Image (cartoon, rainbow, N blue to C red):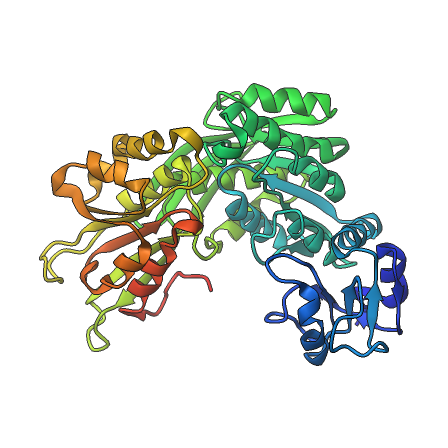
Length: 481
């Protein structure tokens, strides 16, 4: 097997020296997922990665990238010693990008980055060798890590780029040296750090600074901040393309049908027509898929193969996965549906999740309630700044919420929504997700559809896990592990 990195190459790229000769077939920052042959990178985040270097080497790491000889590691161990680990990882990433002939797509946006990245992975996988991070590695260490893992023979790569503070996206985009940059949308997220939607848009638009000369910029064409994208793309000398529902965009969603368990759409992509089906309901998923197809077309690839691939796409775990779980091993009919969307939340993604719940079909006549219910467990949306309570309360005005039977609210911010809900719709309000998770048995019945949605910090995933523990996965389950 051709190594990803030899000791000589990695030392030259990272700006350090090696204690021995070695060959690495991968790059890892976590001993729990490390594979034999990986180069272990001793990053300092919550914990100092140097504390795990000995365990990594014992687990079969080819070498460890460190800034000092870690405690418990013999000095003659295979080490790549540098001045500082994170800058060295960035240099390794830059070297991987320089040697690669892959065409690289960068994806950012307030909502839909990871789903769109995975749609692109699926759409490109039938066109050649494609590389993308297995998780949402989109920050100051995640993007360099993804690039450092870029296989020598990759033909395409999809790089997700996120931000929580101003000035983070442009350096990461420049590191990736993009052929195409895609912005999914802009919504109230991280308002605490940015202060306004316009500031968020400017930060997202800074991804265009990382485009190669003559690269393509693809962005949502029907937002109030669309002119911000267009201006930034023009400054970067990019070719500009828009997607959305409008007839004047490069990509247009011509017709959309969101039904229980499926989304079917007809689209115009450039001068071609496309029909695609997604195995989950969601208007937001359809727009993300449209953007992915636009990227495929701009790369001059096979649109038909891409639409076929989207039929096999599944949302990443915690981002809208649908699971059917049986409450009785002896009777498969006694089941309920869980929509796990607990990874993150802002007002736009919350509305999209409620729309997806409204499109589901509960089953009547099999549970104790006699009628299947649509139930939502909604956790706090974090980092929304001074308007956070108003933004939570406004969810009651979402048209789809009228189709929901019971809403449980978790967290002090969601109390605002709870107080505005019609009494017939109110479930429970609790301060913490643990309180609701401890009473999971009473949350769901056979025939119900239950949505769990909230920012990661609200910990509503605990409720999803507790409800999941009530049932047994059924054959054909759509959840993606």
